[in-house]
Length: 172
Image (cartoon, rainbow, N blue to C red; front, side, top):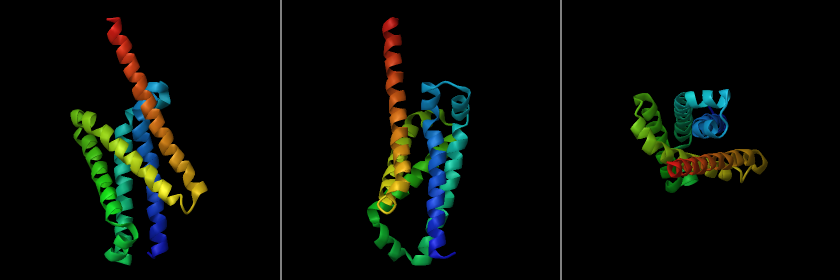
């Protein structure tokens, strides 16, 4: 594979991963805000979307490593820098921890760790798409807006859930 084809594969797997991640990220919130068969199905399959996301992003990582092999490690470090490399490595660790939580069916782990990982990853996607948008703003604007919109949906569901909890507690 030449450099151009590898870069296309990297961008493609990032976009596929983003869609799978959004399904997992939004499943509970959408089910809570808009109870319907489709949102219940999404929530019931959230773990599968998480595993699909991890698999897709593993493929993404493979293409990144192919690019490193093609260009050399020093070239990649000059292009990205240590800060970006460290941040994205942390992202991969969060992805694999989320997948492990699904595979191990560790609900306690998921309850405490999953929100942190989800918010970190949605922020990472938004920033990565914003940076990519510097070269193709119209194309990447939809991805940035989807990430911001997803954050809005999650925050709205969290606020609504807390209001319901408060109302239930005061009614007792």
